[in-house]
Structure formats: C-alpha cells, structure tokens
Amino acid sequence: MFTDMACFSAFVLPIWLLTKRRRNQREKGTKVKRVALANMPPLVNDLILRAARGEHVERPPVWMMRQAGRYLPEFRAKRLQTDFFTMCRTPTLACEVTLQPLERFPGLDALIIFSDILVIPQAMGMEVLMVKGKGPVFPAPLRDPDTDFAKLILEPDIDAELGYVFDAINVTRIQARGRVPLIGFTGAPWTLMAYMIEGGGSRTLHNAKRWLYTYPDLSRKLLEAITRIAIEYLVKQVQSGAQMLQVFESWAGELDTDCFRKFSLPYLTQIAKETKAKLSSIGLSVPITIFAKGANHALEDLSYSGYDVIGVDWVIDPKEARRCVGDRVTLQGNLDPGAMYAPKNVLKEKVADMIQNFGVQKYIVNLGWGMQPFMTPTMAGTFIDAVHEAVSRNE
Ligand code: 1CP
Image (cartoon, rainbow, N blue to C red):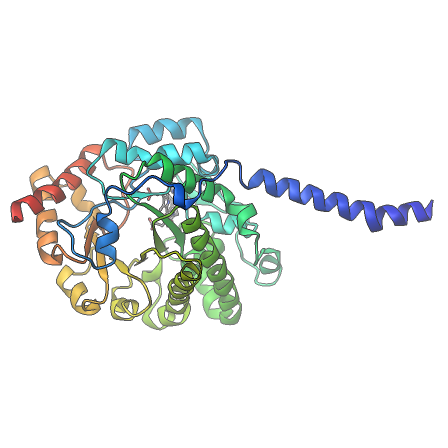
C-alpha cells in the first residue's frame, strides 16, 4: 500500500500535473494558425513608418490614441455583449474592434491593436477586472511587500499567457489588408507597477508612492521583472505582425525629476535598446514610440534613449518640444483632447496651427492623450479631415 502511494506521488502525480499544465497553457495559448510575416498582404500606406524613421513624407500621418473605444457606437454595441478582457482574449473580436475606426475613417494612417496595458499584470498572476463606470480594478493589489510580492510570477511563460495578443495581431494584420500599419504596445514598468499597487486608477498614487520611497530595492526588482516581460512581449508582437510599437508610460508625470531618472528612464531605455537588438538579431526592425505623459522635463533625455518617436502631451508648446529633442527623433501629438469639444471651425484651426508649429516632416499628428468616452465620431472625423485639409491648404 505504502509503495503504491509512493509510486503514485513520485511518478504518476508529477506527470499528471505536467500534462494538466500543458493542457491549460494550450487552452490559453495559440488557437489560430498563425500566418508567417513573409505571407502578409503588402503595405499600401506606409506614411507613418516613413515619418517615424525620419524619411520624407507628403503630409504628416494621423491616428488617435485609444481610437478603438467607447466613443464609437459600434464598439459599445460589441461591448454590451462581451466582457472587456474576453474581447481582448478573443482574436476575432479584438481584430474586429481594432478595425472599426479604420472602417469609419479611411483617412487614418495607423491601427493600434485592441488590448490593454494591464494584460501584463494578469500574466504575472494578478486578477484584473473591468468594472463598469470605474475602469480597471485589481481585487487583490500588491500591498504587503513580503507576502504579496512573493505571489507574483516574475518570469511568466509569455506565449502561454499572452499568446492571445499575438493571435489577435496576426489575424488583424491579415484583415487590415495592408491598408495601414498595425501598432503593437505595452505599458511601461513604472505605470504598470503603480496600477499593481494601487489596484486601479488613482488621483494621488499614494500607495504606489509609499512603496517606491519605502522599498526602493524591491521596487527595482519589480520594475526589472516588468521590463524583461515587456521586451519579450514587444518582440513577439512584431514576430506576429506588429509593424510599429508604442510604450505607454502614462503616469510618468506623477514622478518628480529625480524619481523619473531613477525609476522610469532606465527601464524605458532598456526596453527600446533591448527590443531593437533582439529584433535585429532575427532580421526584424520596427520604429518604437515612447509616450511618457507629463515628462516634458525629460524630453532631451528621452531623445537619447533609443526611441524613434516621442509622444508629447498638450502642455508643451510644439516648438519647445522640437527644441528639446533637436532633429534626433520624430514627435507625435499633441492636441489638447479637450479641443475635440470645440466648435468645428475652432478644432480645425487648432489642428492647422499645430501642424504649422510642428512642421510636416518628422511629425505624427495625434492627441496629447487618448480619446475619451464623451467624444463623438463626428469629432474624430473633423480632427482627421482637418489634418488632410491643413496640408492641402499649405500646398
Ligand atoms: O469598458 C470598456 O470598454 C473599457 C474601456 C477601455 C478600452 C477601450 C479600456 C479600459 N482600455 C481600452 C483599450 C485600450 N487601452 C487600448 C486599445 C487600443 C486603442 O488605443 O484604441 C490601449 C492602447 C489601452 C492602453 C491603456 N490602458 C493605457 C495607456 C494609454 C493611456 O490612455 O494612458 C492605460 C493607462 C490603460 C488602463 C485603462 N484601461 C481602461 C481604462 C479606462 C484605463 C484607465 C484607467 C485609469 O487609470 O483611469
């Protein structure tokens, strides 16, 4: 009897557990047969890639952060039927909503894959829910540095945990039929760490700040782990079909200049440099954008950090932003999202002035932050038309 039990726990149980784990990973992982990059439809409009690489363009490309989202009635209709993260995890659905803005606005020059920055904390073992009227919520945020940190998976199996994003990118790249490039993205380490500790959006970030100042070494450990994950995640997005990448450091502006230099910039730099090196070693290369919202004080440092494009928010003058970065990078932004609520003629004038101030070359038109749920498709249409009109007016 004893030997039977010993045999069971020594041999049968581990094998059973291993196959169960593999089965789970398969279920979470690849469901669609991926198409190789060599067999993707040829790209018709490469304006944004040329602008990002600093090559000559006829007009600046335009897209909008959060362009797939709740300001579109067709998105809301889909969301009524499905939970947010189920949408992210279902490649056909993620593909459909990624394409929605382009179907409505053929004047757009890029797509961004429908997903969320919080899929990385999920891959690290944390639960994240999307609560109506509240946004993302972590039922069990990181609070206790000992017990909670120990529960985190610092080296998750990226293919098993995030394979659905790669599938969604692959399907979308095909369905986009080469009309415009597809952008992949990740949250940056500090922003993700802050969400993981706060457990959701926060005005003060007081829990995350307490952690950062009280446990700087542990904070670095966490930031390093997220950095490694983000790099592998970005490389795999490109291998699946992403043609450009963006890193969102949405809460950069919450850090003072010293903390930004210690807890954000080094990791942002590592992400750009290592992602590029890894891609280059497998014969791939895509432009990468950093959007460090609120870190206008660091524009010069960022212009040396390995990124091709720097996204800027609306509280910096375009000419001042250009002065900080020289001609080293392309700039992206920076319309005040609030200008979308202006009368049509005022909005158009703002866009024309913005293009005049940034200049047509080395520039990608965007908002200074994402589209908001209160905006309307008409506002987005006016914004995009304004870009096309402003350039033809200048010719
Ligand atoms: O209920 C819903 O339908 C949720 C709305 C929504 C959507 C459409 C959320 C919740 N995320 C998204 C999609 C999303 N998120 C995209 C898709 C592609 C696109 O741009 O069209 C992207 C790029 C993101 C990235 C993201 N998520 C960021 C970085 C960009 C930014 O705006 O700074 C951040 C901070 C998040 C967290 C998040 N997810 C959702 C909300 C409402 C938030 C912000 C919560 C907060 O802190 O207040």
